[in-house]
Image (cartoon, rainbow, N blue to C red; front, side, top):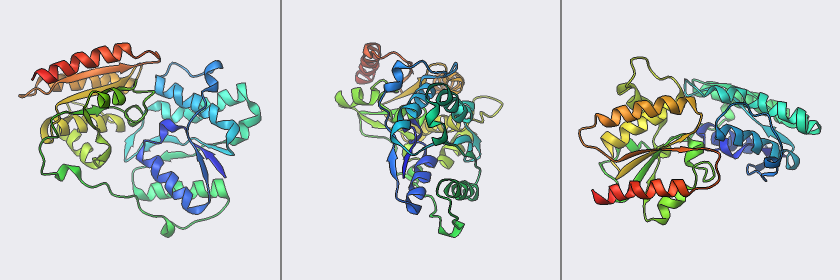
Length: 301
């Protein structure tokens, strides 16, 4: 069976776990990368951020080469709400399929994920296996999620001298197209990169809970992850600098940008901090210019 999942969703740990579990029950040929054919097609994407539009286009591009397009309706992960756009993603993709290529309408397969516990994750998997493969599985046959080593227990308090911490949504940090090639640019200039990827979310959430700038808790999962990572990199293990990559027109990023700038201003010992906004422009000269100026500050410290 050939199953497609938009590549932008794959950096989410839940999606990686779901893919691994499905592969245990049937031989699957996975497809993630788009062909970019849909760039020439007018799509209905709404007033959304660039990553969301990219997910829609990737989904449309995958249709001709797969048997099933898997688009989970991500409502909640790890007891925290996901961005509302994730809930609408299957509907927006279905709308575009019906308008542009109705012959593929039967390929879209969505399932609601509203998860607070591992048992709820397992129930999602059981429903999905039945939905995709018409077979039943027992919860006893599901392999538990791999536990990420607790990086917070590291005895090191700093990183190697030329290390930059990148904050942001996973699909921005791990997609060179969406992050404007920032990771490639840093590597080419001799800098190492660290991201919150290997820090357990429960630890990031605990840090966010202790240091939330707002009186009312910021309840989006991505904001908990970003806020916790900021506290980790400014209080526990400190890099040479921190760059916050945000997506233009993202509501969560709009709130977090204000919060992190405010928290950074209160730090007793300042770590160079920069906010870099990504949009749909293909040219990256403006990114290179800002990055060079930022690194000049770090090299001068």
